Amino acid sequence: MMNSEHHPVCSHTLAAIPGPPLADPESLERSARLFRALGDAPRLRILHLLLRGETCVSEIVTATAEKFSTISQRLRILRSEGLVRRRRDGSHVYYALADDHVKDLVFNALAHARELDSPTISQPQSEDD
Amino acid sequence: MMNSEHHPVCSHTLAAIPGPPLADPESLERSARLFRALGDAPRLRILHLLLRGETCVSEIVTATAEKFSTISQRLRILRSEGLVRRRRDGSHVYYALADDHVKDLVFNALAHARELDSPTISQPQSEDD
DNA sequence: GTGTTATTTCATGAATTGATGAAATACTGA
DNA sequence: TCAGTATTTCATCAATTCATGAAATAACAC
Image (cartoon, rainbow over all chains, first blue to last red; front, top):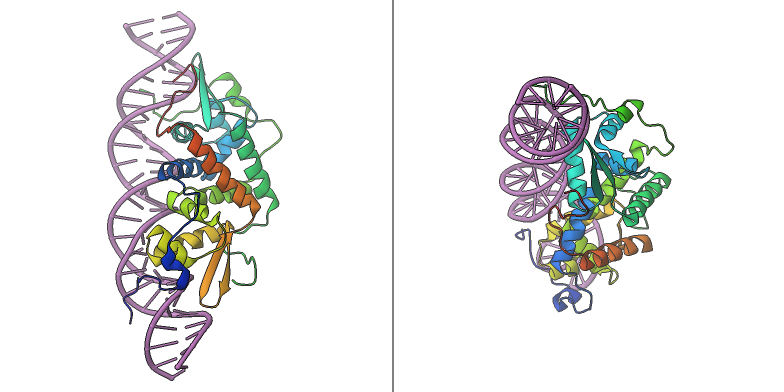
């Protein structure tokens, strides 16, 4: 009956890891947060809107037909990861993609997704599946 | 007293959006899922390990000191988004990054994160903050 | 000052995600 | 066949995330 979770006993495992590039937890965490901020369709939609250039919150609200507070929270998350910057002009606040790096990232991600065939769950990739 | 969530009344908002590139929900959703799979430090750690090349599950378990079922679930998620592929060899299953595109993505993300100064929450970016 | 529009913050509840033990499946070798 | 190792699947619980109404803050016009 084997008590479920056990230690592996195969040859190579016992030798632990030798090599060079071990990512520090700090960087892993930061990258993960960045990706997580991008990992939400409604937020991606905002970023996609911003590809057109600086846009005020009201415009985003209108364009997406969402609640003000909803958009505001999404923008807060995007901003906390440095994906967008904001600028106040009078009573309006304008948001824009933080830099060209973000612009490329969003653009490429969506372009890539548009090509691919929808792999909702488990697409076969090679022999074993 | 204003019933909280109201419609914006500023000039540009009423004109909705005119322009060209509207991302279809399908692509947005697909990109979001991809990013979400990357948006978890433990999963990123696995991908980072795989930068070294094909690795069997037991090795990953040993290298990360996690439970077998934990690693297996993480790999399942990575695989469901096409980030890794797997190959069975006898009783072992080897995982590898799906392609060079993924390799670059992971490599660049971590490199970029390593440079930056830790922006855990709200870093000032321009005039307005 | 008051009133109005624009935006953010706060608190809360609902939905999603992540880790895990247990059981199931897959392969190998006797 | 049985026994052992390797890995996945399933069910469950805890933690996180998301959307939202209400209240707060900010800017402007009067």
